[in-house]
Amino acid sequence: MESDRQSTTAAQGVRAATENKQMTEAGRPKGRRRSQAERSAETRSTVIDAAIQCLFEVGYAATTTSMVVERAGVSRGAMTHQFPSKVDLMEAVVATVYDREIEDYEALSGGGRSRQAFFDFPRRTWTVLSRPPAVAVTEIMMASRSDPAMAERLRDQQSRIDENARKRVEAFRNESGVAASPLGGPAIHRLVVAAARGLSIEALYSQDDESIDQAVDLLCQIMTLLYPPSDGD
Image 1 (cartoon, one colour):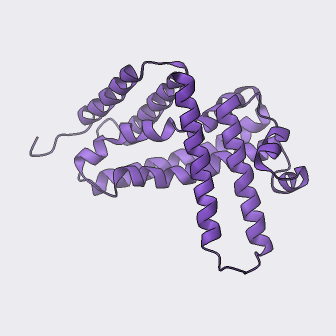
Image 2 (image 1 turned 90 degrees about the horizontal axis):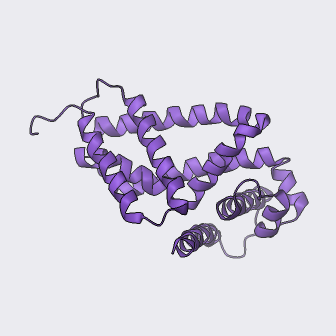
Image 3 (image 1 turned 30 degrees about the vertical axis):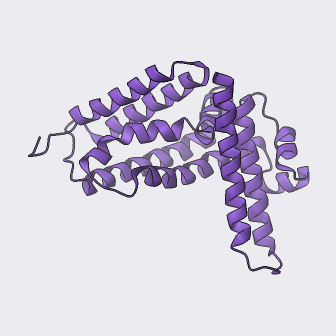
């Protein structure tokens, strides 16, 4: 059951990457020769998508640059031109996944801004962080513990990502008409993200989907207790 779920999720990630590539190709006038910048951007995107798939399927330790090259269907020279080292590639994966996740969060909210939409933040976070791209980033984060060079690069990058994410959540809160929490928005955001990421790791080997869903629902309920009630509550 679990292997079927992982295979299905991985397939969804591959399908999404393929659709993105097709959309890019569809948007280019037929017969027009691609520029060097376009070819370079496409190669870069293809390599990053291949790295995400490898990280999700076999983990960081087993993901080699040779494996990524083979999965991407590009030459080693083409990959090293974009990413001279594995650390460079991993850093690009983290940045790319975060940029895509911004769109995912917005899509999951349906563009709506309401108290309920805000308090559903843990559910959206769990949904996003349990997908293959986010699991790939988790693999990178865990591996950085034993890789000082990568840890140093990711520390600054992750700090910027976290700060940007907190600002987006605070903006969402304001637009949803929810008063600020006396406990501090940044601390609540960190707690929710950490809990959702932990559940996403558990889901990789656990077959108890119902229990995980219940835990996510509980996080949503806890969110409502961490912010002041509205006049109508």
